[in-house]
Each structure stands twice: as C-alpha cells, then as structure tokens.
View 1 (cartoon, rainbow, N blue to C red):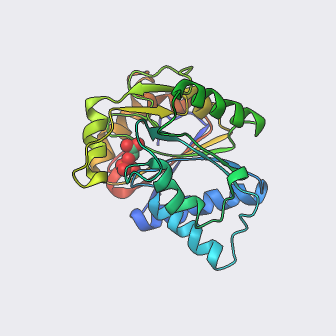
View 2 (spheres, rainbow, N blue to C red; view 1 turned 90 degrees about the vertical axis):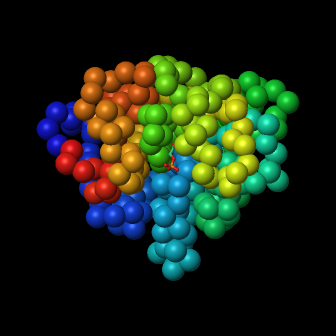
Length: 246
Ligand code: PGA
C-alpha cells in the first residue's frame, strides 16, 4: 500500500482462518527467535482463531512454548476471576492454559483489585523486570482503541484505570450474552504498546474496514489510538473483508 512508512508491513489474508494461520506463523517465528518472548496478549474475538492455531501447533509438538511469557492487555474493573466477564478468565481459557503458561510466566491485572492504580504500577514493574514487551498481539476497536486505550489516548498514555466510552460499552456487549459491560477498566498503556519491539494488529471483518482505513491513512492522532502504531514496528494482518480496496 502506498503512503505507509517502511516500518509498517501489511499482510492481507483470504479470510479469518487464513488470518489466524498467518498470525500464528508470525508469533511462532518470534518465539523461535526468542523462546522466552514477552507476549502482550489481547482478548476480544479477533485473536481467538490465532490462539486456537497456537494451541493446535503446541499439541502437535511443532511449537515450543515452555519459556513463553504472557502479559494481559486489559481488564474490566469490578469483576472477580469467577465472573464470566473476566478478561483474565477469557485469556486463561483461550491462551495461557492451553499453552501451559505457569503463573511465574504470566503477568496479569486483577479486576477486583482494591487499589487498581497500585495494580497498574505492579503490572508496569513486572513488564520492566521482563525487559519490556517483545510482541504485542492486538485487535482493533471499532472506535480505534488499542486494549482499553480509549480515544483520545496520546502516545505516552500510561497503564491506568479509566472509564470506558459508550462506543466500547456497545462493542463489548455482544461478548457477554446480555450481562452488563463493566464501565471501568484497566489497560496496558500506549507507552508499553508503542514501546513493544514488534506489534501485530489483527483486523477481521467488514465492520473494521473504515476504522482500519483511518488508522492507516489519516494523519496519526490520539483520537484514533491505533493510528499511532504507524510509529511502531507494526505488522497489520487483515482479512480481505477488513482490507477491502485499501
Ligand atoms: P474484537 O475486539 O476483536 O472482538 O473485534 C477488538 C477490540 O475491541 O479491541
């Protein structure tokens, strides 16, 4: 695509299944280069196929994961681990348990933390101890958010607690079968995401086409946090439905 900086690579996948396989290829490559990779991992629907593909490769014995380290991208506030809306629970069932990531190789938020700010500081300290994020695997919010870095989020927005925007409350609602979406959340900061050695942005489906266009082609702005990724070592993996005629 014309107009993108050299640090941005684009892979257009045939469909969601092909996207999952291409994304798993990229993650597997990074894990080969660095077995104790620090992976900042999103929940949401888009990465689920990719995580299932990683699990399948692990089960087939073609993916070595025994040193993989995983950090949770974001979490709702006011939910405990046994709440069906816990994003930790979602990440655990889809990625960390299938890959056998042990607690010392897992960095997480606590949705029921008494002091969410302290939880955020602990998370940041954990990332720093691990030497920063090697690979961030992200979905794209329909409002351009990354994790719960809601618009506007400047590049130096830290790991923090915040109120979700109406757009995110709406886009998250389908996950929970009629249960209310929690109104507050914590997120890994834009500073951590943009400081990742590499970012994979996974984008699937026609409903993401317009926000993907804005993220890649309009001037970077905190009003579309994903547009700030153009300053990072970014690989976009989009399926044809999301890519359209871009
Ligand atoms: P999705 O969510 O993968 O379920 O589309 C992405 C996001 O809101 O960040």
